[in-house]
Length: 307
Image (cartoon, rainbow, N blue to C red):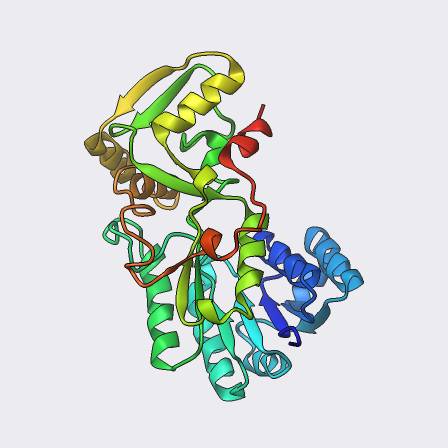
């Protein structure tokens, strides 16, 4: 069967670039919608050149330019959007273009995090997850075929800090433990998220499903993460326990958006938003179960890079 033609929106971003490369690597005819301004920005222009050299076809346009959206969407079978959280609601224009084109057999919207329908902190997150849930409801109302990618936390964010919001490198002396430290969260490397995502595009098992990523080597509690880190650095850390109440106070006392790392920490390691539910019984599908041959970077392997 011929590989689907894939359009990546946000291909000059971090995850979007990995998605475009994974699409090319798996042999999909790959297209990227790129803003005109990106060609004059050194970091983005390098990515554009790399994608073009690898065989991607480029369209100039943006989520705000409806005609460019329709022109690009009409050329492909699958649309993957990887824009930032600030642009999530701009996908309404993209949904309208997909509906008008009438040729898209799969839309993967810009989620790539915690399942917004499972979140338990909607009163804290400044609309971060409700905006994503709103896009889901529009997709479903318009009967657009979809796959939602629920990859939870990226390794490059909180894990690179050993889940110590506000820091830029993991500590080697003291460490904050949130709550009892036993609630588990999930971390995924962006390149691995891209690989799993591209595996879904022609897979009927993931059509109109939420794909959840919980690889065995990437699901850990704070206590377990600290223990792994202590083993790697050969040193015990002084552990400072922060109660749920103290973390909530820190969230309230820290201005938005600087408190978002604290909010993500609260969601993951206090409320357990990534692991409190069973994937299959909730109607989702398990990505690592569907694609056992995909090699992913474990938490331990990622922590080795921080040494």
